[in-house]
Image (cartoon, rainbow, N blue to C red; front, top):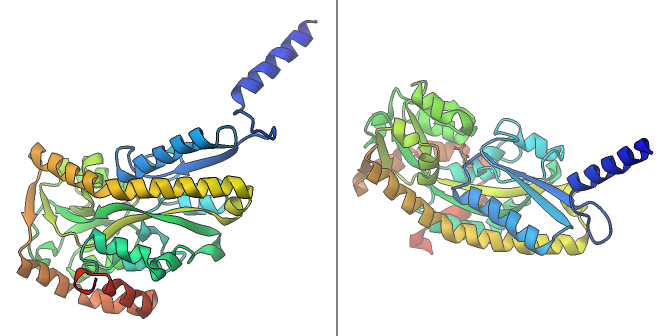
Length: 334
Ligand code: LMR
């Protein structure tokens, strides 16, 4: 009898700890969504909204778990984990796909896009849409582009002209274009996962970095960067990606519903991102941590001119068709 009670009790415990069952009696499909930034950023908010809408619209059929701040996987291993289906969704920065396609390096090209609006136009047009499928052979499917914002240069030294960066070490994402960008300035680029950036700046192993305002504030990078130059020199945007085999294995109707949710979340993230960066910029300036350096038109032109060899260096790898399509979206060509 005691054995029977113990067995019933352990069954009850097992049931309580198992996720709710779907209508067909199957356990819900689990989507682990991992990312490397804080909840209070455009990507962090997007991940939480996706989780909320899936819970409301597909209860018992799909369950989303969100892992922020590199708590499940970090920059070094997240894409391999996705390909192994150990995690089902990520939204890495577009700079982080270099190993799988060179074409997305277009987004790292310094001073190529005039502003986030131009980046947005590129992503919406045919070439941008095509790039969502550029990694399918490696089982990586792009579902959407999510904005964060344009990057700013921060440092322990005031950076007004390209030569001012010479001799400094800058933390970068793992991207050859970004490496070349700093080399062109006479600086050294140090590739490093996002999770390590604050400590490296704090300890003085690197003296500068490039980030959108939301990442500067949410990682408190401004507390160790006394100067921030508003360069808007490149995009830090994301591709929401999933594992092809996982995604196309989801029953059709459920996948259609998930795609509709992705579209809704994408709309929300992309509408809110610029406002969040503007608000975070204001918070940083109000904190008095860092001096804001604004570039004159001539200074900006000097930075842009200094970067031309980088464009040349990567034109072939990225593809001149992609580069042309990107140049077309700037304001003067709208
Ligand atoms: C970085 O590594 O600087 C960014 O890609 C982090 C992020 O995901 O915004």
